[in-house]
Image 1: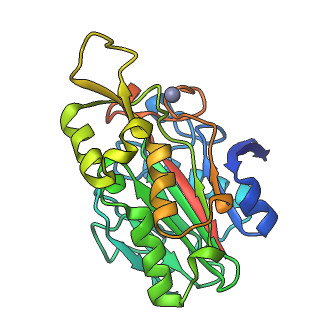
Image 2: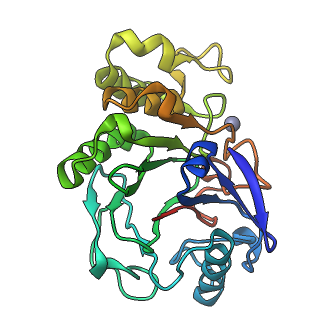
Length: 273
Ligand SMILES: [Zn+2]
């Protein structure tokens, strides 16, 4: 991914999505008006930040990404694997009109000029673009979503609803917690072994570098897990682009739940036809 800056707002883009010509981006902390722990481009409402500041941050990122502020359609994430199709009536959901749904961790659309928006602070943002059927999607893959293979759920829904062929779809794994930062308990590790099978154990799990004497801890590589989910869904290897930015390793660029806890702003993923 590359960092770009427009009118003081910094965001990241995928080379493959840029080449394909689809508007998209992943936000950073840079270029907003929020203060304190929200400094400065917080895109999460109801986190304790002033609504007027969050709205101004949306206007700024919309302008930087050349997207339609009025028609943005937001998710309502609760670590499920619920992915829904949104259409014309959903333009403005959560920003210029109330959210009509709850427990939605992935959004898919073929509606033009209606940017999809999902939220993050260490969990993995997944981007999807089918240039043949002209369909875009975003989904939120924390450890629960990854165990539930939300990346595959999204591809399957794109196929069901719009006849997308997995071999046409471009996928992106955006800034989130890296394998050197993400220590998890044995319970979580076991969920991954169950979901992915022992054959992938060596790739996904390895002894903690923080607690080399503590056999009960593992370092988890969510990027590798999400890549496996994409491959299982039939996405060609060469269509998968993986970020080189960790949200926890770069506190000046990103909010990190592992560093800041709940007292923080939210980053967001954007994509629009
Ligand atoms: Zn890291």
